[in-house]
Image 1 (cartoon, helix red, strand yellow):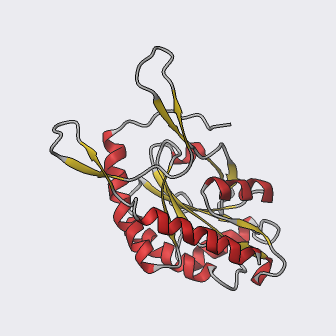
Image 2: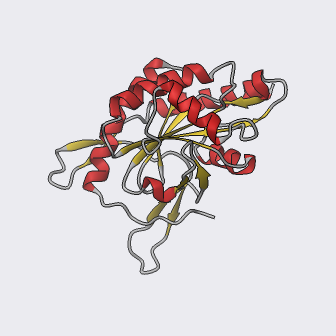
Length: 234
């Protein structure tokens, strides 16, 4: 079934990503010193320099989006300017993996809720049911009272499913799946330049522990590297 194919595909991705968790990179101060750096996840393109210099590597970026959160406020790429953020996909009536996913993501939130540079974004894949009041109630039942720190957001299906693909997870209508939707349990870690820097199995405690440990790695990296305005790839 479709939902099992989604899980199998994502499982293979997690296996591949595990070996990429922390890539060493030479520091600017000494070739003998190394600092951990997270990989860039997804497609990349090597672009020759028009002047004959070193080629540039262009990494895939999250496209422009416009969502609405549980407070009725717009959520766009600019909402996450100068921040790192963690995403997932869920629906409020999900009878299968969502409760486990949100429980695990809540662990991450509790760890970083006092850090304004870390923000959370959960997309509903059932916008017909998950109205703004439903999302607000869902967030409050999780103990999330500040929508600016964890956005539970809605948008039309086409927008949400396209974003799921951009975050390298899966979500779609599936009448045979519990609740009528099939989706994976992936969390994505995104940097201020809209690059995915980590994907984690939100149903696996060890994977979520890895996310908790890798957030400071990304924060340290972006503190040392000013954010740039990165246009989305066509």
